[in-house]
Structures are given as structure tokens and as C-alpha cells.
Image (tube, rainbow, N blue to C red; front, side):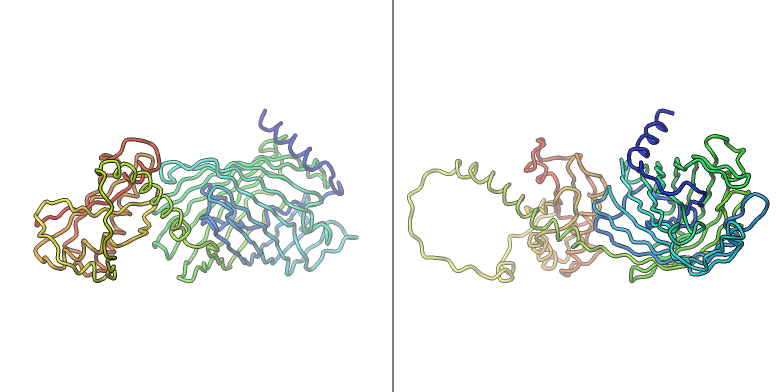
Amino acid sequence: MKLNKILLFSVLFLFVARLSADFAIDGNRFKTSPFADGFLTVYGSEGLEEGLLGVDFIMNFQHAPIIVSGGSEVISNQLAADISLFYSVVKWFDIGVSLPVILFENGDGWNKDDSLAKAGVGDLRLVPRFQLFSLFDKAISMSVITEVTAPTGKQIHSALGSGQFTFRPAIALGTQTKWVDAALNLYYHVLPKQTFATSKFDDEFGLKLGLNIHAVEKLLDINAEFHSATSIKSPFKNDAQDNIEFGGGVRFKTPVNIDVIAGAFGGFGKAVAVPKYRIYAGISWNMNVLPPEDERNRDDFKLRKREVRQEEQPKQEEKKPEEKKVKKAPKKTAPKQEAAALPMQPVKTGEKLPNEVHFMHESDYIADTVEIEKVALILTRNFMLKIRIEAHTDRHENASFAQKRANAVKAVLIKNGVEANRIKIKIIGAAEPVANGDTEPDMVKNRRVEFFVVTD
């Protein structure tokens, strides 16, 4: 109850000025989700990829979406096109905006003197999502979603939307795995107290369940959803608001970042704005407008690497005895390829090579491949040898990055002519740090890949 009071206070503070108090149906239930996270009206709890921009265009046909007391069909049929735009500002915050365009509808309207508009625009909806946490590699996540609608539809006709701003805060809980995603939404919908005929309307509480199955990886998803809501004042006793809706659909993914979506829902109960059935189909397009994360981090990584070298340089200089400066003839620096082709010392089995590759925090991006190319040259000259890659992380990183780094280094070796069957991988993670401090120079040393020569 304390949470409800806080939410109600927020609504009163934000929406003191309301529009007309006469009856108008809330348009929230007519709309699809502006988020491309596998569900249509159930919100996922995991934030989108940073910099992701997308557009949804979904056709939505509903049969008998508004029936009031006495069996009067205010709207008998409705065909709408939902246009949604979403953008992920950062990993933990994204925002979507959706506008339904009513292409056709027919029915009796609210009364004989109020003819129904054949077409128009519904309520504009703004949906910001704040991710509170994501744990165990997305196994458990939670977000707060503060959905707000503006009464744009009512300006055309009372059956096209709500007569006032509406506010519907929700908590989204979810989990993501390789093959299955699931989400639970709990929301409190703030509505003005209204009566039309014998139908009474008040604030309502609702829940939505969603299940998304990755039937064919990166190609086909199958989703199912369950929706239910009831009046706060008369739980499970208000025919105008108590509703159940169940349905699902499929999402086909293409290589050009365009998804094709289709499905159907059926409504159960006598609640207003719950259609007997609805059918939807459309497309969803998205792209990341930011440069790849590796490229964005490249300059930052080089800067950190330079700082580490600068910190180590004075220590090395202290160990060297003072020597008289002798002018020497300048040496000509050989090109990178010529330097790599110089004779090398024989390599012994079991030997740890001096070559190492270091990484940024929670990244598998390889800023410089010179050390890996040197190892590849050794292997191409010694056909009986194999190499073992040992991958490490610092103790603040997700353990999965050790495998990712090993795979990235292996790919560079293969690109430089080393056969895949001559490369072994050993994942160590944070178990064998070479530096125990928590400073960035220490962490850089621990985020490494090392090479060992083997013959078995």
C-alpha cells in the first residue's frame, strides 16, 4: 500500500491538469511494444545494446475491441498500424515512443448522437525503461518502466483513446538464456474514476507473462504471452476491467537486421478494450548507430597501455648503471615484416614464450597483433610444434571473457597460417594473477593471454 501511495502522489504531482472527465476508453491495450526484445506487449527486463536504434511497423486487426454493458459494440472492427521508434541511450536506459494510426474502424459509437470516426490517430505513448540490475550473465534482471500516454486520440474521437494523460508504472523481472527468455510484468494503472452505463472504471492492477523460445538460433523465435488485469477497488468483480488475454506468435530474423513478426491473441471476459481476437503482422528494423565497441575502446586501451609502460619505465632505468653517453650512428629501422623474418632462437618443448597479449576490462578486442604474428612465425617454421593458449582475466571480470580472448587469439593465429589442430586452449581465468593490486596497471597485467610450446 505504501508503494501505491507513492505512485499516486507522483501521478498527482506530474499530472495535476487533466483533460475532460467524460468517459473515454484507455488506448494502452491497443498497442504493441516499442522494444525489440522478443515480446510484443510484455516488456523484457534486460536493457538493449547501447546505441541500438530501431523502428517497428506492425499491422493490428481487432474484432470487437470495445463492448460496454448491454452488449453494445462501440467498435466492431478496427485495423491499425502501430509505428514505434526506440533507442538505447546506454545499456541500462532505453526509451521507446509508439503511435497507433487507425486505418479503419466501424461500430455503433458511444451513442446514436456520436458517430464513430472511420480513421484517425490513437494515443501517443512514451515508454522509458531503467534497468536496476542484471546478475549472473543475464540470468536474473529487473527494470522499472514508467509508461505514459498522451490523449492525442481523444482530440479526434472519444473511442480512439483516453481523455487524459495516463500513467502506468511497471516492474519487469526476467531471465535470458541461450534458448529461452522469460519475463514477468507487474503494473499499476492510474485511471480516473468513471462510469458509463452500468460499467464502472477505477485504478487497476495487472500482470503479464511472456515466454520467448529461440527455436532456431539467430533465425526463428516463438513467443507466448498471458495478460490479466483487475480493478483495485473491486478485484475480480468488475466486469468492465477484469480481463484475460492469451496468445503468441513468431519472429523470423534476417541477416539485414530486419525481423518479420506475426501472431494472434484471444480475449476472455467482458472487459472493455479486450478484443474477442486480434491478429498482427509486421516488420522490425534495427541497427547500432555507434561504432563497434572495440573501435570505441581502441584509443582508450592504447592510452592505458602507454600509462602502464610509463610507470614501469623509471623502475627499469633505476636498475641500469650510469654509463657515459656515446654517440652512435643512427640505426635504420627495418619494416615490420622484415623484422619478423629475422632468424630466431630454437624453441624447446614446454617452453613459455615471452609473447603476451593484453586486453581492456571485459573485452576481447586485440589492439596489436604483432606478438601473435611472432608466435605464428615460430609455428610455421617448426611444423612438429603445437601451441597452447592460456587465457586469463582479472578478478573483477566475468569469467567468460577468458574463453572469448582465447578464441580471438586463435583466430589471428589461423589467419596467419597456423592449422587449427595445432592450437590448444586452456582457460585459467582469474586463478593465476601476476599482480595482486587493484590498480589499473595491475589489472592490465592480469588480463592476458600467454603461449606455451607443446608437442602432444
